Amino acid sequence: MLIFTVTLLIVFAVSTFYCTRKQQRFLKKPIKKHWRLLSLALIACALTLAFVQLSATAAVFYIIFSVMLMLMLIPFISLLQTKG
Image (cartoon, rainbow, N blue to C red; front, top):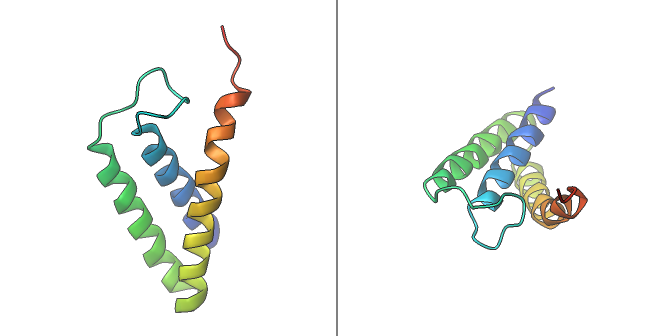
Protein backbone atom coordinates (compact mmCIF):
# COMPACT_ATOMS: atom_id res chain seq x y z
CA MET A 1 0.00 0.00 0.00
CA LEU A 2 2.90 2.34 0.69
CA ILE A 3 4.31 1.84 -2.81
CA PHE A 4 0.91 2.79 -4.25
CA THR A 5 1.03 6.00 -2.20
CA VAL A 6 4.55 6.71 -3.45
CA THR A 7 3.38 6.19 -7.03
CA LEU A 8 0.42 8.55 -6.57
CA LEU A 9 2.69 11.20 -5.07
CA ILE A 10 5.04 10.90 -8.03
CA VAL A 11 2.20 11.13 -10.54
CA PHE A 12 0.78 14.23 -8.86
CA ALA A 13 4.22 15.84 -8.45
CA VAL A 14 5.27 15.31 -12.05
CA SER A 15 1.87 16.42 -13.35
CA THR A 16 2.10 19.61 -11.33
CA PHE A 17 5.66 20.21 -12.49
CA TYR A 18 4.66 19.65 -16.12
CA CYS A 19 1.74 22.07 -15.86
CA THR A 20 4.09 24.87 -14.72
CA ARG A 21 6.12 24.68 -17.93
CA LYS A 22 5.26 27.17 -20.67
CA GLN A 23 5.61 24.44 -23.32
CA GLN A 24 2.90 22.28 -21.75
CA ARG A 25 -0.20 21.54 -23.80
CA PHE A 26 -2.34 20.05 -21.07
CA LEU A 27 -3.89 23.35 -19.92
CA LYS A 28 -4.66 26.51 -21.87
CA LYS A 29 -2.26 28.53 -19.71
CA PRO A 30 0.51 27.20 -17.47
CA ILE A 31 0.00 27.44 -13.73
CA LYS A 32 2.22 29.72 -11.63
CA LYS A 33 5.83 28.74 -11.10
CA HIS A 34 5.58 28.64 -7.30
CA TRP A 35 3.70 25.33 -7.69
CA ARG A 36 7.05 23.77 -8.61
CA LEU A 37 7.99 23.91 -4.94
CA LEU A 38 4.98 21.76 -4.16
CA SER A 39 6.02 19.23 -6.77
CA LEU A 40 9.57 19.09 -5.39
CA ALA A 41 8.19 18.66 -1.87
CA LEU A 42 5.95 15.82 -3.05
CA ILE A 43 8.91 14.10 -4.70
CA ALA A 44 10.87 14.46 -1.45
CA CYS A 45 7.94 12.94 0.49
CA ALA A 46 7.71 10.10 -2.01
CA LEU A 47 11.43 9.46 -1.69
CA THR A 48 11.13 9.38 2.10
CA LEU A 49 8.24 6.91 1.96
CA ALA A 50 10.13 4.80 -0.57
CA PHE A 51 13.13 4.67 1.79
CA VAL A 52 10.82 3.35 4.51
CA GLN A 53 9.45 0.58 2.31
CA LEU A 54 12.45 -0.34 0.11
CA SER A 55 16.22 -0.49 0.40
CA ALA A 56 18.11 2.71 -0.43
CA THR A 57 19.23 1.58 -3.88
CA ALA A 58 15.80 0.27 -4.84
CA ALA A 59 14.09 3.43 -3.56
CA VAL A 60 16.32 5.75 -5.57
CA PHE A 61 15.92 3.59 -8.67
CA TYR A 62 12.13 3.47 -8.26
CA ILE A 63 11.83 7.24 -7.85
CA ILE A 64 14.11 8.05 -10.79
CA PHE A 65 12.39 5.48 -13.00
CA SER A 66 8.91 6.73 -12.04
CA VAL A 67 9.77 10.38 -12.63
CA MET A 68 11.33 9.62 -16.02
CA LEU A 69 8.37 7.47 -17.05
CA MET A 70 5.83 10.11 -16.06
CA LEU A 71 7.79 12.89 -17.79
CA MET A 72 7.61 10.82 -20.98
CA LEU A 73 3.93 9.85 -20.69
CA ILE A 74 2.26 13.07 -19.54
CA PRO A 75 2.78 14.99 -22.83
CA PHE A 76 0.97 12.20 -24.67
CA ILE A 77 -2.08 12.57 -22.42
CA SER A 78 -2.68 16.01 -23.93
CA LEU A 79 -2.99 14.35 -27.34
CA LEU A 80 -5.92 12.28 -26.06
CA GLN A 81 -7.95 15.34 -25.07
CA THR A 82 -10.79 16.22 -27.40
CA LYS A 83 -10.64 19.63 -29.02
CA GLY A 84 -13.84 21.47 -28.52
